[in-house]
Length: 95
Picture 1 (tube, rainbow, N blue to C red):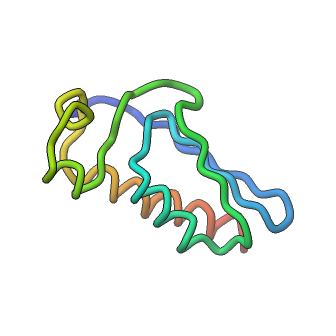
Picture 2: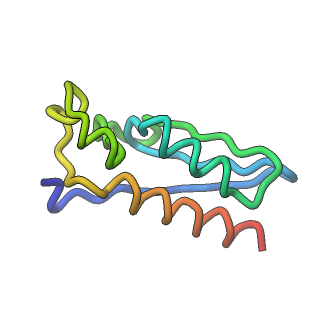
């Protein structure tokens, strides 16, 4: 699932605000992890930017199943990998 798809990730900062741009619909639990662990006072998570890969559920979403999981073309665990990468980007631009 998801093989051969390039997800372009981006992050920027404006003073105390960090913004991440996700070209897919992120589960709220993954978005909250980014906000809670971000090095910025305020972090905004913007979805469906620069493309539209559909849903990328969290591990919990994959376990619970449903429309979003059925429509997803990526493997379980992809959402958590992307969270870590967004956090790496935010820390990189903060320093």
